[in-house]
Length: 112
Image (tube, rainbow, N blue to C red; front, top):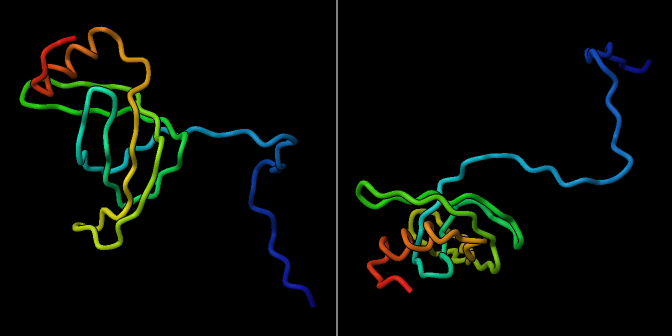
């Protein structure tokens, strides 16, 4: 005798005809390992993917910066401290003049 359970869903679910990419806004704990005018090196407990884009929010003292980054390269370090075994190199995407100036101020660099 087959064990059948009654359907509990209120609506029928179907698979989409074409595969689309879904973007979710989630927050991940990461550590900025180093930063330059063009990008950042991140340490993470979560594996990221090349091509992923995210908003990076950083602050130093009373100054804060929010920029879009894109992951360009990945590596792992299984002996990393704090469980941050994944490394992700990311570039800044389309910085505005204001963001670039603030980034240079945060880096302590002379504006270009």
